[in-house]
Length: 147
Image (cartoon, rainbow, N blue to C red; front, side, top):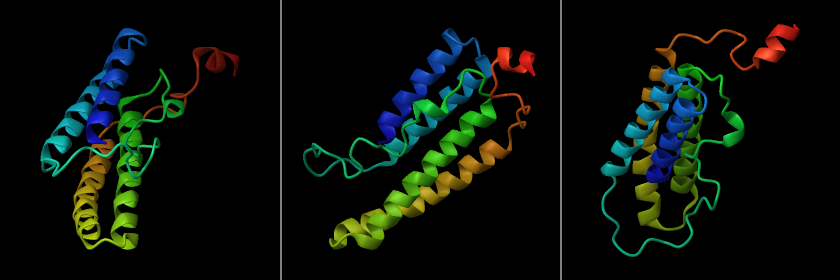
C-alpha cells in the first residue's frame, strides 16, 4: 500500500511539474512520495508470499483519488489530500484490529493503527504549516474571469 502510494505521488509530482508547470505543488507531491517510501521501509519483511488480493481490494486507501486532483492545487491541497488518505488508512487498520477473528491479525492491525495515528498527526501538522490557498484556487481562469 505504501509503495503504491509513493508511486502515485511521484506520478502526480511529474504531472504537476511537466504538464501543469505548478512547481510548488509538484515539490509537495515529491515530498509525499519520499514520506511514503520511508513508511514502506518501516514494514517488516513478509513472512510468506504476497497475497494476490489485499483486504482493501482495488480501493487502496492511500492512493490519491484522481477526481480530487486539480491542476490549480496548492501545496496545502496536496497535504490535505494526503491527510485524508492517512485518515482512511487509520480507519482501515482500526477496523481490522476491532473485527478480525484472528489474534495475530488483530495485534498487527492495532500496531499499524497506532503507527497510522502518528502519520495522521504529522500530515495534519504539515498541511497546517502551509499557507492557506486563495478561495479561487480550485477554479479555472475562465471561471474566475467570468465572475
